[in-house]
Length: 411
Image (tube, rainbow, N blue to C red; front, side):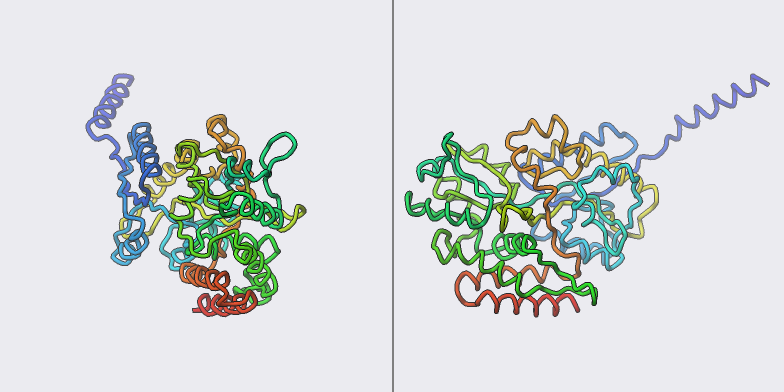
C-alpha cells in the first residue's frame, strides 16, 4: 500500500513539473513619463521578479491621449486588465459599469488615510485603490523672503497661516524686492479649479444639496472664495497671465516670494541650483479653520472585458496592494503615500522635506463625486480667469458656476 502511495505521489510530482500552473499575464496601462515613469517601471519589474506566477506587462500611453484611448478600448471590448485612473474621473467610468467592484480586506482598507479612501467609492461601492494623494501646497523662496525682511527674531522666514497674512507678506515682497509676491498658474487648472476649490471648502462650501441629492453651489461662499483670490491680483502682487511653465520659471529663478503648485514639483526643486526653498500646507481663512486643500489621486482600477476572469482580477489586486505598500519609492516623485503605515515609515520620512507637508494628506479635498467633472473643471478654469481679469464680478462668477454645474451634472 505504501508503495502505491509513493508511486502516486511521484506521478503527481512529475505531472506538476510537466504541467506547471500557467503564469497569469496582465496588461497594464500607465500614463507616466519622466521620473514617475522610471519609478513605476522599476517597481513593476521588482514585482514581476518577486512573483513568478504573475507578469505585469506595462504599456505607457501618452498622457494627452490616455483617457480617449481608454474609452475606445472599453468600447471595443479590449481594455487593459489594470489601468491608472485619477479619482476625479472615477464616476464617469464607474457609473457606466465599466469597472470591477473591488472586495478588499478591511485590514488593508483601514490603513488608508480616511479622506483618500472615502473618495474611491461610487454609490457605496469600491472601484479604485489609491496609490497616492497629490495636493497643492505653498512653497516659499528663503532668499527672497530674507531680502524682504520677512523673518522672525530667530532669523526664520515667515510662513503665513492665513490668506490675509499671505497677502500682507506678498505685498512686502513686492514693495521691498520688486519681485512678485505670489506666483501660480493663472491660465489653467491651478487658480480656477484647485485654489478656488480649496478656499471654497475652507469656507464651508459643499457641492451637494442634501434635500435633492444633486450638485449645487453655495453662492455666498463661492463669491467669497473668488473675492479672496481676486485680492492678490487687485493688489498686483500676482500676475494675471502666468502659464504653468512661466510660474515655475519665476519661482525656480528666485523671482517670487511665495508659490502655489502641486507636490509633484518636489521631484524637481531639490535639483535646482541655488534654489533655497521651503514647503508647507496652504494658508486657511483663519487659524481656527483647517487648511483644506484640493488634491487628486492616481489609482489602480480594473476594467471589465470579455477577457476578465476572477483569477486575473485576484492577481491584479495582488499587484496593486503590493505596489501601494511600496509607495515610499513612489513618494520620491513628491506624491504623498495613501497608506498611514507608509507615511510613518522610515523610508518615507527620511526623504527631504516630506515631514513639512505630509500633514496635508489628512486635509485633502477631492472633486465632487459626480459625472461630468472633466467638463465642469474647464468651466472653473475659464470663470476663474474672468474674475481676476475683471470680466466677471465674484457674485456673477458664482452664479455662472452654479448654472454650469447644474447643467453639466444633470445631463
